[in-house]
Length: 370
Image (cartoon, rainbow, N blue to C red):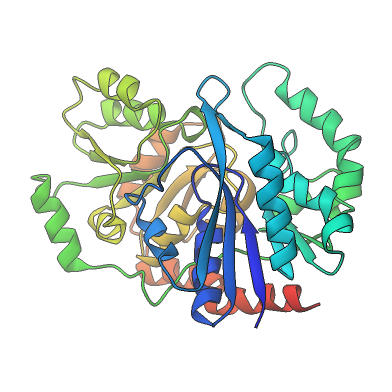
């Protein structure tokens, strides 16, 4: 059995980290998660419940969140203390992302603390190649970063991984050979359409049986572009839009949706499987996605997808699964087409089978063991 530490870069736990932590804990491995924290863990996120296991230990780093920068700044002393501890107590550190201070420090300190500790670095995309932030100058900064400091950073881990072939294809040429492709996954045994759940949700929100429902699940931030969901709700008044999630834009979005009776904000929910079951199409107009877990879960429930054509979404959503839209394309037209077209739920479910955690976990285990 191994001691495995996952390094989570943000206040919100990354879904793959939570899933892998739980899987390995149940197999008997000792698992810890190093992460920035400004207080208690928000248990309203349904997947955070999975962290409650005797073999999972949480290592929070005291941090202060600055809304202006949308970034949690760590206490440097606590960061160093917890990172040294993680290196001393584990033989595998699996780090997510390359541009936060939390993941970078283990890469720098390993030669001095524990040379035998294996380091795996995972990213869902390279800023300036897979994702282009709207803030002026950020893309240019990250391109310079990648071609200077990045040439050092990406040589420090034992293994670098990303989620799909299409994501890797967009990397700068010198990085492509450094990365191997390992998908994230979902639990196909646990995620299935529930007719009972569909009826319960529709009853809760007084949605008629013949009313079509579009579902959005995600953080209410600029990158997720929930404002496009509201534009669609205005253009398609006969369709009910369920908006699941929270974030600093929620109040602004709710205010702009005051006159939209068909747009319902649900906040954070734990019954996401029932919500997938209740919808007729899953809608994700976001930017900068890697391999979006919400799309994968909706597909496991047999639901057609309308999403932005980029990165890992291209590997997921074929013509039998849904409709992909360019980032500046006509999402409303795509939604209308998706609701009109009769997608086969069985073909949608078949497409997602290769992303079952049972298959994916073995690949990660082999990576840790080498």
